[in-house]
Image (cartoon, rainbow, N blue to C red):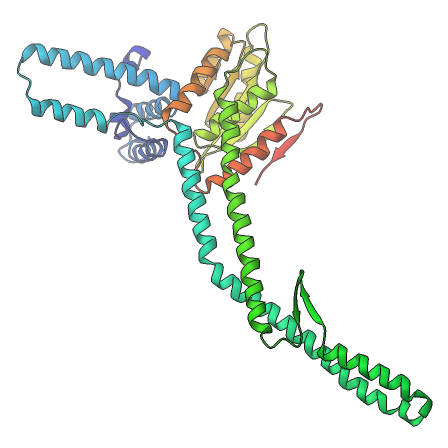
Length: 402
């Protein structure tokens, strides 16, 4: 099938998903159609599976999806024009129906950062509520420990007093020790029944009859302070995304260092839902995981001649060794004709500096929601990952996050 024939394909129809599908829905559609049409499955079809793979590859790439939708909308407009020429009647109800269809199949109106900010704020609220819901239990547990500690200390002091009385009888045999014994006894009485227990600056007298209530009050203050600090720390996590947004929104240029460009690429894949796994500085590889499959990313940022086919061959070999089916190659000076041919045959999408900027721009505008799961933990992981990329390394280093 030629590229021209592929252009006529409605990828959404192939995967049997709506045009407003998220990346998760695209993956789900791909899995479901693969189970039906894979050649190894009874009743499967190699030709149909080629279409399924093409549809998934197209819709999972922001630039390819944009181009596909542009062609698809153009075909719809031509079809609508032909239909209008055949019938000049156009009722009000038809307009409403068309508007509903456009709304149903339109792309998300929010950009990716809007969606991820909403996820973070929702997660912060949920975690804050969870912390507050545990307040009573935490207070009871802390108060119980502190009460036990207070009682043990008080009992120990009283035992010391009784031991002192027993020891006092011995010196009484010698009258010369009577005065010393009285002083020692007085000190022990003061030790046993007087004094304070210091709870981190919060002092409670051993003679205080309301000591238990005061300990509970101290526990409340302690837990409330801890919860406020944890909620404040959670709220600060939004700043990580602000730093990522600032990094990604800035177009890459040849004046920037390779580390700056690579950090931007890593953040773009994070937006698409990929978690960074490892980074190989010497051979310029990054590996990502979306919860179901791995992708391999290779990069080269420099001015000069186009990257040759050897650079692509090493990537193909690494993909084969790690059993990775999808790869992305970012060669800012461009790729040679042979390199481009091999990349296409090996399911490697490649980008020059200009097309990379377009790809990231489309990634931002599409409305991706980032990786599934705990978005705050994923952001912290991304921050650690890109901070490692910024380190200047002279020999091969392999960073792993598990």
